[in-house]
Image 1 (spheres, rainbow, N blue to C red):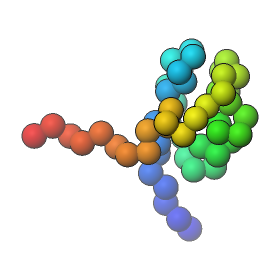
Image 2 (image 1 turned 30 degrees about the horizontal axis):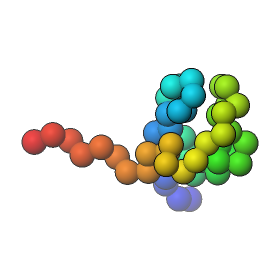
Image 3 (image 1 turned 135 degrees about the horizontal axis):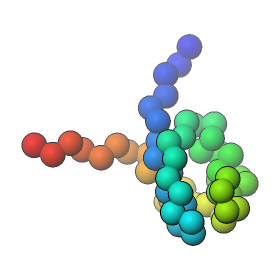
Length: 54
């Protein structure tokens, strides 16, 4: 069993924000936003978690 770190996705059109896994990431890239249908690019998906402030 593999663990995946949730990734944050924010739609550039409708601004919907959701946590996604690797399978959902590929689905978004293939099919677009699940809310509004806008095309998604990999730049719209934040693969790296934000660093916590010191």
